Image 1 (cartoon, one colour):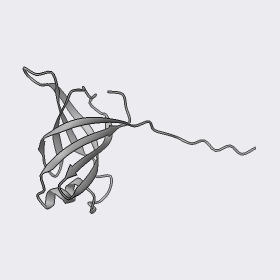
Image 2 (image 1 turned 90 degrees about the vertical axis):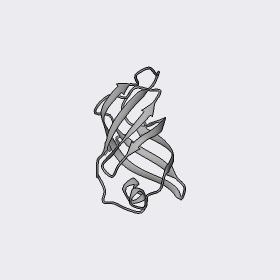
Image 3 (image 1 turned 135 degrees about the horizontal axis):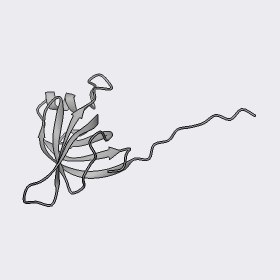
Length: 107
């Protein structure tokens, strides 16, 4: 009997606020801590649609005097810039309206 094995990934969504964003990464604010090295996908809603980029968490610091965390992420460039990539949207200078992260590791 030939049995093939499948690999699955459980994703979870975390709502965040965009603090700063550039063509290479972003600084987000969240009520949840994220482990450095966490890989995921950032979905960013802008005036003209929703955009995505694969990310890696490079730092996570408690907000001074607050109850949240500042999370630094770098874009992974796993695909070339395409119409629905955040990098393409930033090239058009749109302002982010909301953001969410889908991660595949516990935070």
